[in-house]
Amino acid sequence: MASSTEENYLKSLYNLANAEGEVNLSELAASLQVSMPTANSMVKSLQKSGWVMYEKYKPLTLTKEGKKIAALIIRKHRLTEMFLVKVMNFGWEEVHEVAEQIEHIHAPKFFERMDQMLGFPTVDPHGSPIPDPQGKITPLSYTPLSHAKPGQNVQLAALTNSSTEFLEFLNSRNLSLGTQLSILSKESYDQTMVVSYAHHPSETLSEKVCERLLVRVLE
Amino acid sequence: MASSTEENYLKSLYNLANAEGEVNLSELAASLQVSMPTANSMVKSLQKSGWVMYEKYKPLTLTKEGKKIAALIIRKHRLTEMFLVKVMNFGWEEVHEVAEQIEHIHAPKFFERMDQMLGFPTVDPHGSPIPDPQGKITPLSYTPLSHAKPGQNVQLAALTNSSTEFLEFLNSRNLSLGTQLSILSKESYDQTMVVSYAHHPSETLSEKVCERLLVRVLE
DNA sequence: CAAATTTGTTAGAATGGTCTAACAATGTAA
DNA sequence: TTACATTGTTAGACCATTCTAACAAATTTG
Ligand SMILES: [Mn+2]
Ligand SMILES: [Mn+2]
Ligand SMILES: [Mn+2]
Ligand SMILES: [Mn+2]
Image 1 (cartoon, rainbow over the protein chains, first blue to last red):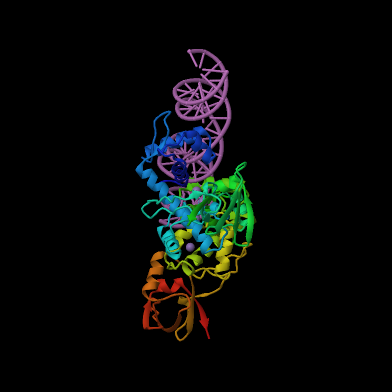
Image 2: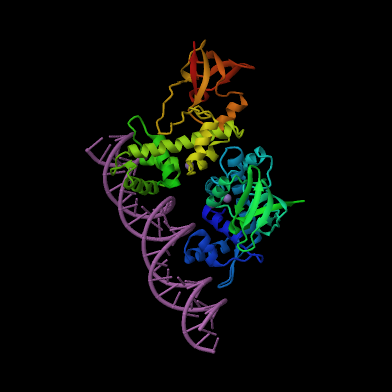
């Protein structure tokens, strides 16, 4: 069975994988905040366990088995976040650190009960999909707000970044998942957008913010 | 900050302490299922951290600081057990193993919310007292059922043993905390007691069972 | 008390996870 | 295409946690 440390490596590999499912050692090391030799030696041991495919100087890929373990940890992480928000009344900006720990708890029934109490949710509090109990994940395809056009009505569906700072920024603007926005205008010089939504007749959002907001376009 | 391993050692020391607050190394090792040299070396390192007082060949005692850390882990353990039973609908026989893991989560707010959702409980699902947030514990003084006399009416208040097997035995007899028992008789040969309670007009309990049941005597 | 048993200690080793220093391979740009 | 920068590897070390083997101190028992 994978240790917490190994689980974190598998999760990072899963999250960092590009379209070809490949990850560089340097990204992996950076994402886990360990030195490259540390990541290197762990990768070799993950290979021995059959969870990672590795050849000297080549990019890393997860095996089928490795991917499944990673997806199930992510499932526990996202279920936990949802539980903290919906059942225990945490703010969406407070849950990640706790979930980072609870995802390593070995107690199937604990997570089954969460799932059940939550009514089998498919997305976490930040709009990211929750893998199913077999580790299958249904990718959701939303549009970055930055790609939307003036005149469109959209609904906030997910985030590409869930840092505490960004979530606190959204809180300060009363923006949350489900918020419906009307796009009033877009400044072509700096890509700033002006939007309106409940109790906010005119709010200006920077390009940086618009890129991180994923929306569903309403007709 | 204490590691999970260290926390488990402190917790065992706390639970094993006799009236003088002393614990032998061999008990400690046995309770944690490690070899004596392992326990010995850990004890030395706990001493270095200022949590244990240790002199060669002498019994171990926790320092004030060590006791507090232990009590706060026990608080997290018992709050978790209560949460699992009351909020997540676990049986009292299913919670210990999960709590053994969750007690090591570092997330004050997580446990504060549990406490709040539970209405600030003072005992866990097995009747053991929950230390307060400062680590102060109010010992409850109940009587073992084995000391009760025929003719008395008592109420099941706590257990001296909470093994899964014992809890399942109690489940099989519909005995739970709060159950009111009338003591019908006690066999002086083998200390077996015959009791009656809701839907159980006459149930025979072995000495072993009676010693493990703590009761409040009703007038 | 002396012998036997139990309890505690030391030494030495293994594993998992981490580091720094040194160097090698690969990729990019002059 | 050679030089520079980036990326990856190896070697060697450290700390935490665990073990077994050997021995020593303390306690119990005949
Ligand atoms: Mn998260
Ligand atoms: Mn984690
Ligand atoms: Mn317990
Ligand atoms: Mn524990």
